[in-house]
Amino acid sequence: MPRSGAEARRRLQQAALELYRERGFDRTTTAEIAARAGVNERTFFRHFPDKREVLFDGEADLRAALTREVAAAPADLPPLAVLLRAFRKAARILEDNRPFAEPRLALIAETPALRERDLAKGAAVSEALAEALRGRGVPDRKADLAARTGWAAFHHAAQAWIDDSAPGDLAEGGSAAGGSAQGLDRHLLRAFEDLRSLAAQGR
Image (cartoon, one colour):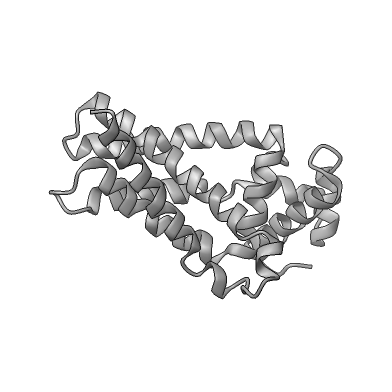
């Protein structure tokens, strides 16, 4: 039995991820998640409102961290550079937690109910980023466009990171830890460079 609320929360998240991958999201119940985690179902609902939210814990913390980074960026940086700086810090969190983060992202990508929740969470993050950019003096329209575009680039980079670190790739000599140390950051830099290139082509 978990000894603390934080430990119970972590075990519930891990149990949910394992069961969703084994049985599928739709065929897994909250009672089964709780049993796998070694707690009762009431404990599950003390931590999470539903079985989708168990995979989105920390979104509010991420949103707060990103907006803090935007506010703290050097004053002379343009909006996309500000966002890239913030996303690179967020990428380190995903890289450090790869054993959970990578299968979680893959599961969301293949599960409609989770994709729907992910889109809602992404919209909230984008709006928070836009507001943070407006706080730096970026005009409303450009702040909104930059935030939405930047968040899309972050998701694009994260998906490329998953695709690039498939098990077959690791079997060819890469390592799960060392192979991903800068992987997401590299994909993130590439995504924003592609954005700049596309913008330049449209002039």
